[in-house]
Length: 393
Ligand code: NAD
Ligand code: MG
Image (cartoon, rainbow, N blue to C red):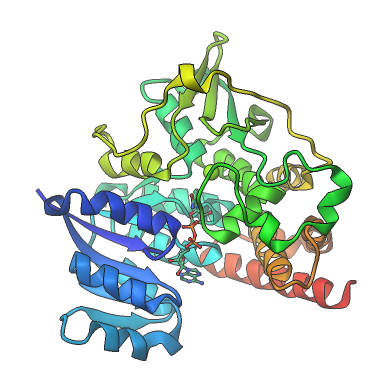
């Protein structure tokens, strides 16, 4: 039986890895929608090769180029955030959510409402609107809606929980490579350049998540993602620095056992697990030779080096829409760093200031978690962060 699948963010790092897997088994899949951003040539090439029904670019100004590139193929072309959401409503069995940033939330919710299995690489969905995403999946479960984690740590935890009772779980440990600056002297961090921050020691990923790994904002988002997805208390979640990135997460049980998930640093494992779930199928990833690797190292995370981890704990405690505020402030600060407006360490300073400024606004943080309210909190946080960046206030 062929499965209908869509990939949101098909032109990115996770999108390419997903396509690599489905191209190896073309008779099993029928591709519905593919979406991308400015890389219209790549999007059109993917849509043509996979014979997609529709290709959508996020940007209206790219529609002409996309139409031209798809001329004669019979593949529909569309553009804009609304078109992406519409594409997410087309019937599909399995949908990959791999847009980067808060823009990934609306199409994911739409796909769940239509009863799709949503493979969630876009961690921002759970950070900004975890309770809404879970409730939407539950509400449409009778139609087949389901959420599967793709972030490597969360896939690892998910796999560690197969056949287990959540009541027996004491703690969840997610590992962090430590990113580009793990071993840098603290006083050098302020001068870290964009090129230096965009270079990950172990994983080959999109630029934004790579920089977020260096600042540990990525791990901060993943702490919140863990709390939302697995429904555990913040004090049950730990971050462990593990430079080799071979253990992705560990689940600690009430009898003292720790179940560790070990695998190569290759996202095709977690994507493939979500694609084939509940079955396991052969995947084209490296088989680890642990004797050759010799040793695995672990250390406690240093909150002075990575203030993002402390901020994530504050956000988990505050709850409500503070995750949406946190993420939007982080995205804006990251833009500021990429554009050369602020230094590397200022990213966490900006985010902290936005959280402080907006946490007093109980109406904003405590409002019900709906898509409209998430958008309002997101916009307010972006504006506040921009003002701080522009004025240095
Ligand atoms: P990427 O930058 O390589 O690709 C992002 C994709 O999103 C591209 O297709 C781009 O065109 C699209 N996009 C960007 N902005 C958009 C917008 N405003 N509207 C619609 N589409 C937009 O990113 P990536 O590394 O593939 O990461 C994708 C998501 O998966 C992120 O949420 C990231 O945190 C998460 N993730 C990635 C990895 C990884 O190994 N790359 C691992 C775990 C989780
Ligand atoms: Mg991860």
